[in-house]
Every structure is written in structure tokens, then in C-alpha cells.
Amino acid sequence: MLSVLPCLTAACKVHLVIGAAIVGGWLALMLWGLVAFIIKREPNPWFWRLLALLQGLLILQLAAGLVLLALGRRADSWLHYLYGALFPAIVLVIAHVLGRGLEDEADSWKVFAIASFFIFGLTLRALTTGLGLP
Image (cartoon, rainbow, N blue to C red; front, side, top):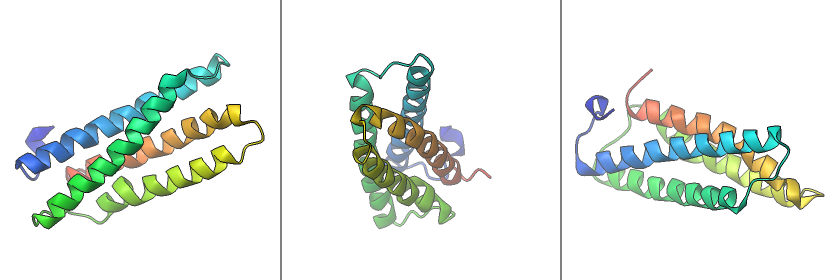
């Protein structure tokens, strides 16, 4: 993956590694939610810990992206910024609002499992646009 990286500075490599971890993490959370739904069991507390970690990584990734912008590195497309920061943030805000508003709070994991599907797709697209892939 590093061979297609348009920027080979350390900051770009860190941004790429964090981005790849984020995409993999959202995929794991989505699959975890899918398995929990299929076997009709609520996920254990590690599901929520992974969700918290991924939300923190999104903020860290945003900070790394801002550092790259400050260093004069810009993505080839505005879509990278939308898919990587704005749209996942919107999905997470909606998921938090819906999760808190459920009649049965034990079902809130389902909201975040569905949200992880969308965030996985969004962050994967952010990764591909950042790498300059179509």
C-alpha cells in the first residue's frame, strides 16, 4: 500500500497507518454486530471499547490530516475530506442520538452495528481517495 502513497513523508505514512487501522476496525465492529445479531446475543463490553477506540482514532486521524494540511499536503479530491471526517461524524452523531432515544437501551448496540456498516464504507472510500485510486 505504501508504494501507491502519493506522499512518502513520515506524516503521510502515519496518516495512512491510522487510516488503515480505522477501516479495519470499523469492518471488525460491523462483523461483530452482524454475528451478534445472527446468534441473537448482545455483544460483550469489548464491543463498546472498540467503538470508543475507533471514535478516538477518527479524531486522531483528523488531527493528523490537519497536520498534513498545515505542511502543505492536500488530497487530490475534496471527497477525501468528506468521506474521512465529515460523513463519519454525521453518522456517529445520528447513531448516538438514535441509540439514546431507544425505548430499550439494550438494543443500542444494533444502532452502532448498522452505523459501523456505513462508516466502514465511508472510511474505505476515504482511504482509496487518499491513495489516489478511482
